[in-house]
Image (cartoon, rainbow, N blue to C red):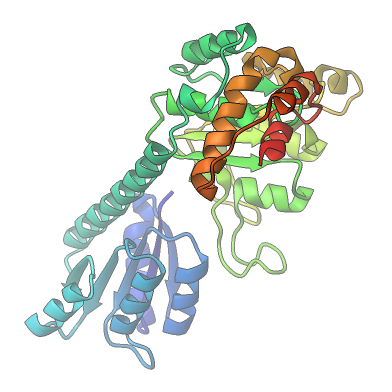
Length: 366
């Protein structure tokens, strides 16, 4: 759901604009104070700002300038009852998306808003694509030619084009997130967001807020509305790392979202629908946790439509030379130093059991 901030010191216009745009499916935030509006630009996840030109204190033009410093691509539509060519030119020079005069035609405003949101959506998609291209998670970032890894490449190729949920298991440090990214960037969703969250790194309350978002005032410290990872991943992929660490109550809520693909933000009542592919990972023996009553069996089978087991490094020692070469080149480039490994170092690398797996190997090379 796209979020629009409307700023005007005339509260009747705030009411009119919210009534006009909310039925179009947008999340509307209204503010009659420019200083508060600027704080929202900094803190909230906005897709569009519509602001009046003339207001007490800081005016709309100053808000435009500050907003562009925070997010140069965020579209800002200026509106005023005192329309002049000079003001329109000034606003456009300061990179306003468009300029409308009051009273405005409803359909014309809705069309302008739609175009502005499409503009911003394309800008964000291009940014995501550019980031993905600069650090592609094709098979190239998964290092290894051993038999276990060849089987994983085959599994990625089979499952990536589908919408199926995938459970990736294996010890810590084996590269489970790389596998998840390879699935995403080889899927039809590759140009949409890949959003990850470590379910074991947050408290239950914070994890709930991060996953589902929260409304303003939902709890102490919730000064603005915040979108959760499910909303941010809409159209793309959400990677739930260490999903086995999730509390029983959150497991219930997650199961409902996976079944219905809809939820409410914390402290909210509005139902939000999303289209998200779920990839999950765990270093736990989840079937044993099911027997112990720690992990829900129905959630497990909802996540475990396809299962990929990532081997420990000691089970694929033939991949060590390729991994070492990759890390040496990585650090050689970043530190601009010539790096060579002595024969006795190679012997030690092969003989060591690597309990921390690839992550430990990378840290050792560094």
